[in-house]
Length: 526
Image 1 (cartoon, rainbow, N blue to C red):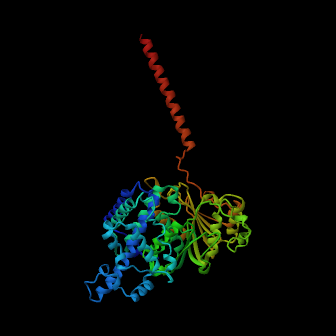
Image 2: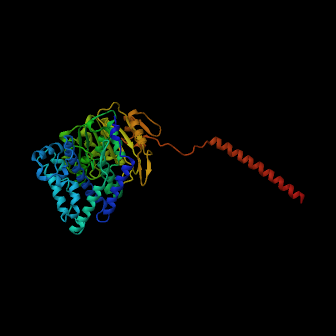
Image 3: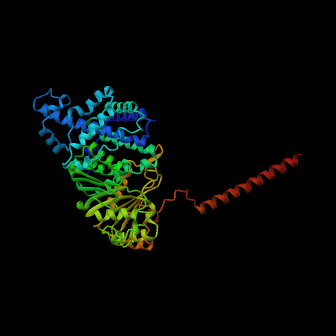
């Protein structure tokens, strides 16, 4: 069941103002640093402001409730902060920030600070150091590493770099970021920034950012028949947008142990952890790891997962059969063959299947070629079909993702299925055109979810194929093989057309006779 309370959004005016402010920052800083690289600075400073205001609000509200309404943590002297308060705050919040190091105070003194880059660097270092030796250390370790305050990309001199840092701090400080009616405006700002940068960064931007409506569809698929989920997992989590859909749709109270994911790119891994915090996910409610999922999975101790969602990289290279150990890996060995070295898509699918709970559902965005190519991929498809793990295959519209126009598919896997038929859905026409991309609307998503739930055939849209049907097609799982396209060409009734032609010929003959008579009459009068 979807928690509508968590689907509330900022008002149109609030969102417009917020997005305008974000664009203004990017526009002011354009030219000094490539927009896609500069996301690290913008998002990093947003995160710094968020945790500053989070801890400031925590202390102020507690004191105000106790009757000390004039108390302001931001005005407190660092020396007045007792050690016990620091340790207690780290236990509850996962981190600690001294009053002088709060975003508002650093911003207030920024213009007069000739060593602003050093000041900010020390603040970030001190925040991270408060987590050392605590349960939150893993989720804070290296979180600020991608905010290189001494990079020449910010400017050729300290003066130039600090000038841009002041502009960045000021821009983020002016953003109307506040939480009202359970709406996390910081999270909304993050998502807007990511979509903005991804749409302008081409392939490099879109490779780890899944559009929100696709993320919602994947999450909704795994939630069918559930009103709560204990653990959610994404083996190629990127910036975490897929995982966070569950918080939006279900609400934190219906997510037991929270979010788990792995990301190979260190910068994206940091972005994912920042994204978790910006969406107000506690440090003890997520476990995001950095590393190669296919070769070095980091969540074996948390298996199995009730819901798995993923948009793994398409057709990347991996070690495959050049690594003799992999064929004996419990994740890949059941199929008896490894995914091709040049195309790791099926390796991600087998990994996800091995991590899936017996009662769980996995929804994975896939490159269409894996559904019809031969060789090892065909053998893995055969294994998946004969073991009755494939529940649904969905053809999505083209041009949904940033950086690629490929019409991708969604593969839905289940281990405990009620029947042995596969549902094929052709949703390739379910979209609206928005600028240069196609976009799923709510009604498109609802149509797919309703079809999966009802599990009935719909002419030109959905087809239920038996195991024998699929076997006859040599385990081809392409949607177009099973769902007939509607012929929208005008239907012609040949019999009726012949009658009409005969009538036309007869009229022509009659007219010709009449014309000949008129001509003869005219000639006779001469």
